[in-house]
Length: 496
View 1 (cartoon, rainbow, N blue to C red):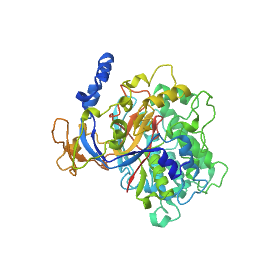
View 2 (spheres, rainbow, N blue to C red):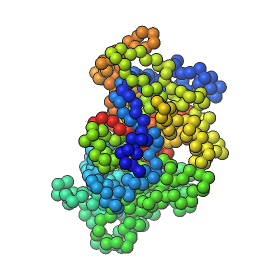
View 3 (cartoon, one colour):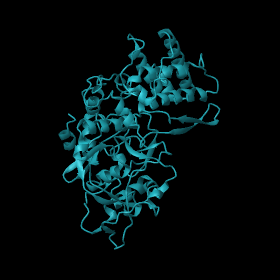
View 4 (tube, one colour):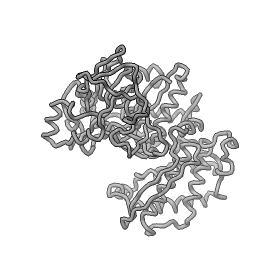
């Protein structure tokens, strides 16, 4: 599994083309318009947020499926196996995933206190040299924000406990943060042990966990509060500290711990996975999409595959899709560029992946009360019926099986793809494109949006339970330093 032949066999080639990003309700099929009117789905209003822009995309291959737990498990276990040339515990991998293109410099988090006062927490990641370091800081920021939301109802026993504890976390994970070249990266003086004995660590850990738990019980939603009262670690900072405490137990107090012992999908019971307790009538754990991982963990998986198989020497990189690559795969026929002139028909755009085969709307398959998507029979049926067929192969799980990370940053001011309509945005002119009425089309040469002033990242696709229909044109945005229960990813392969 995860050989290059395996990856290619589970990918679909999409030729270079021009396609409409977004959609226009005028071109939606009459069958869908009837359903829209009958059930008041507001599809017309949803499409208005993403008006059509004609875009050029080079050839690429996209994964047929969302990456599974079994596939991601190979990545995680590459750490303890010390797989070469790069593995899950390699410092360079987590530095590269946090490079200048994808790093978060800062974030302003708006939140409400218990008295409904709006406050802003400024998070600064400018000094972080690795995703692991930034992730640790993000957990510390979240705990502090939760405590601040209580307006003094919840406080730390020792006001310095939070800072000391997370300094110790960095110290114990220094192997994956700094590697063997500490002086080169200037970490020697920054990452040190703040404790003289283990009892001091235990006291701070208990103080932070107790305080954070009380804070969440004050400000979290009812479902999270109920889970916390039942003893579940349903919030990411508490889950991480539980894993960290277990990894520290019984070992050398000064020794570093490997990343795979504390950072892996949040719904896994251990680095070895979480397959227990699933009934035979349900989809096995190994076949389910991996979720509960950050954007950076998803991207690291792709970088690891690229390095492991040395695909760059073959002129190929494995990465996450951008918005246009996802949407083209989910909505547009595989029409290659043709000569120097091409006529394209906007009516061929499908706002749901399966519309080239059937006219069912989203809720025919998803979000049905009393039906578990992970029941084997229903899963197999929905997988088959909602796939998009492309040149004899199918692309599965494009909507309804979870949101999907993309490499695009989200610009809240870019309503209606305004950036693509700017005169200075690169145009594609090698092939003259016309609509069916003979009008020449303005075609942009699409590139992913990577302005570092924006810290949210775009997710595409959608979860099974969603407000409104899960159109393949809908856009969502999430903080990239958190894992979510309904967010997975798929790979793309494209020329360097």
